[in-house]
Length: 395
Ligand code: NAD
Ligand code: MG
Image (cartoon, rainbow, N blue to C red; front, side, top):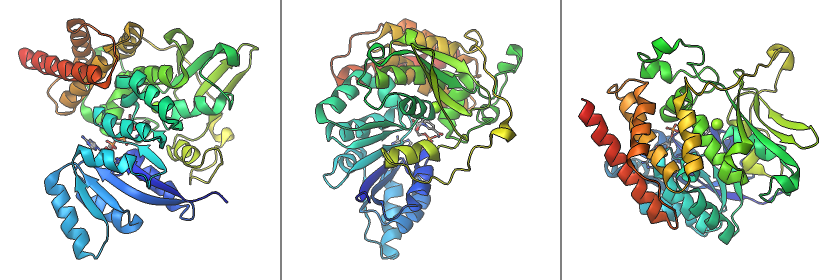
C-alpha cells in the first residue's frame, strides 16, 4: 500500500479543481488535502473545507476571505484562511506538501506553480499557461529541484502514457517520429465562416464533448487552446514545432497519439472526462479508480480524423508562429489572448476580433530572449497594455 499523499489544490473551485476533489474523495486512505485555493468563490470553498478539512484555505479576494474565515469559525473548523498571491506560493511550497494540483486558470497560475517546482513538489499540471508563458524558466526549475511533472491536460496525459517510461527528452533516441495532438475542433468546426462573426459567448462556451471553465471553452472554440497545447507539448516533451501535428478528431475519444519510426502508433483512449488524467497523475505510477464509465467501443462505432483548417482557426496558426519565434512571443500571445477572451466574454468584441487582436499585439511587440522570470512578466504586462489600447481605440 502506498503512503498518504498530502495535496494542495490550486483552483479547487474550478472545473479541474472539482474533478480533482471528486477523485480524492473516492480514495480517503491515499490522499489528505493540505490546502484549497480559489479566487473569490467563498461559498463553494466553505463547503469544500467542511468536507476535506484542509489546514489552509486561500482566497485571493480579501472580502471573500473575511467571509470564509467568519463562516468557518462559526462552524468550529480549524482551517486557517489566508489571502494574497504570496499565500498561494506558501501553500504550494510548504514542507508538509507532497503534491500540487496546478488548476488555476490563466497567467495567475504561474507564480504558485513555479513555487511548487522550485520546492521540488510532485506537480500535476493543468495550468498550461505556465508552460506557454515561461516554459524555459519552469522546466529549468523542475530539473533543478527534481520535481516530478505529470501533465493533466488530456492530450499531454495521453502522450505521456503513450511514450516510453524512461523517455528522457529526446524524441529521436526513443524512436519517436511525431506527436499527434488531437483536437475536437470545438463548437464551430462546421459553422460557416460568414456566421462566425456573430457567435455569442454562450455559443462559444457550449463545447460538444467537454464541460470546462469559460476561458478554456472560448479557447477551444477559437482553437487557441490547441495552439497553447502545441506550445505546452513542446516544453513537456522537448519536441520541436515540426514534430507536433494537430489532428482534428471530433469524437474526443482518442486523446492523442505517438508515432514511432517502425510504423507503430500508440494512443490513449477514453471517455472525455478529466477525472481519468487526474486519477492517472494522482496515483502515478499506480492506477486507481476515477469514477469514469468504461469506454463502449460498440456505442462509439466510428472515429473520424481531419486536417486542421488554419484559415478558419487563425489562432492555431498564430500559436505555431509564436512557438517558432521563441523568446517572449508565446508569453505575448498568451497575454493578448487572455485580454481578448475576457473582452469577448464581456460582449465587447466579436469572436473574430480575438485572432485579429492577438496578431496586432504580436506585430507591435518584438520578441526578446528569456533569461529569467522577469522577462516573461514584463512581456505579459506590455502585451496586456497594448491589447487594452487597441480595444479602446476601436470603440
Ligand atoms: P475554471 O475557470 O473552471 O477554474 C479556475 C480556478 O482558478 C477557480 O478555482 C478560480 O477560483 C481560480 N482562479 C481564477 N482566477 C484566479 C486568480 N487570479 N488567482 C487565483 N485563483 C484564480 O478553469 P478550469 O477549466 O478548471 O481550468 C483550469 C486550468 O486547467 C486552465 O489552465 C485550463 O487551461 C486547464 N485545463 C482545463 C481543462 C478542463 O477540462 N477544464 C482541461 C485541460 C486543461
Ligand atoms: Mg486539452
